[in-house]
Image (cartoon, rainbow, N blue to C red):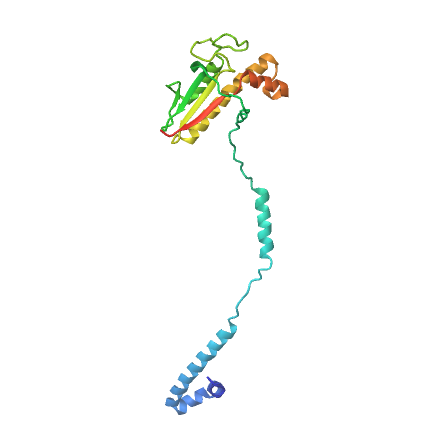
Length: 235
């Protein structure tokens, strides 16, 4: 719409507001046409007002970076990150050159522990429960089969280990065995060795394990060395 049409509409609106009643009395048909023009003009004027009054509001995002940084610092300080705990195992020392590190071990000095794919536990081919494993390991290690162990309290069974320093635990687990069950077996083995070493420390040094010196710790570990062979089987 050009400038001339806009001015014409303004004139109509202005005149109609002052003389509308007079026009209605003298020219009814003209009143109808002017009414239509008046409605069109008012509609156009309202649209113009809506377009001009619809201002786009903006949000000041200058402080959003500071707020995000403060939230990041808050969560870093207040959140506790859990640390995964693994199994502490010391690998054997490498075999020196030009030296045969293999040794023949008598069958009675080996305790075979097996975990099948269903999670069942076998000790020397006998099905046993996990709660009895620690007792079985202690009886095997502390057996004193040849009577040479002065600190052992075993019964001297001829089918069990001769000496704690000669005792070997062979742990084999199926690849499909539950991992949680494998960890439970490892825990029971550690408990058995810890109980035997605690008893040795109390009888020999009259101390707890936590109060032993470095030399006493070495002597306790040599009395009951942790010798475990782990293998994984597919079938």
